[in-house]
Each structure stands twice: as structure tokens, then as C-alpha cells.
Length: 176
Image (cartoon, rainbow, N blue to C red):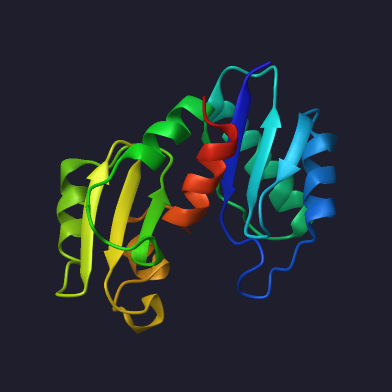
């Protein structure tokens, strides 16, 4: 069965507390197999007979929303895709603590890419590649003018960001 890594938005942030055993149970109730979680920020690894990732994303998001009472945007990557995401290094020499990967449902349009590049400051750099946005934050992320809310408002899409250390850890364990 194909394996997927789900990156969930709004898990254990903003007052939306979800225990990992409950999250695993919700995924298992969807008929997904070999469900594991990785740290408590909404990273779920599982196997599914489904081969259409976009359809599966929608199904997971819908069921999680119904079970948790709020919208949970879901972004799936295969182990191969995750390996490529983790290996891509648009900011060589930048310490991992200041590098983030934003997961998107589909690639940005050229207009959306221009909007992302408009977020650049002396402390914030961005690179758009495939279905990800890479963010280099040279200051503390809490001191940046960039935020997920600003990103989503400006682009009118949903996303979720992870520190590159988390992404690389997942890739080391699950990427092929």
C-alpha cells in the first residue's frame, strides 16, 4: 500500500489541542493503516489503498473537521516527494533553526509567486519550489513581519509551515 506523510494545519496551536492517540484513532477510523505521529504538531504517517492523494487530502480534512469541530487543512506528500523537499536547499549555509518549509496543495501561480517574493525583508528570504515555499528567517520567527495568517490572506490559499529540522527528521525516517 502507498505510504503518505500528512502535514496538518492547526493542530496543537491556537487553542486547538489534540492528543496524538486521538489523532491516530481518527486516521485509523478512516481505514488508514500503520498510522504513526511525529511530534505533536500535526505530522501523521500512514498507509492507504488510495492512489489519488488530492482526493485523500480532501477526505481527511473533511473527517478531521467534523471530528474536531474546526477546519484542518491537510497536505499529503509521498515518501519520495518528502525526500526531495528535505534535500532541496535554496539557502545554503543558513542554520536549520531559521529555515521553514510551507506545504501547499498545489503549485503557486506566477502572480502568487510575486506576492510571496514581496514578503522579503533583510531578515526574511523566500523561495518557491513545486508545492512548497521555503522561508529563511534570520531573526526569531516571532519577530518577523511574515506570518502564516498574512501568507494565507495575501494568497487566498491555505498552507502549513514546518521547521526544516522536522521535515528532515521525517524524511530520514520515512523517505525512500
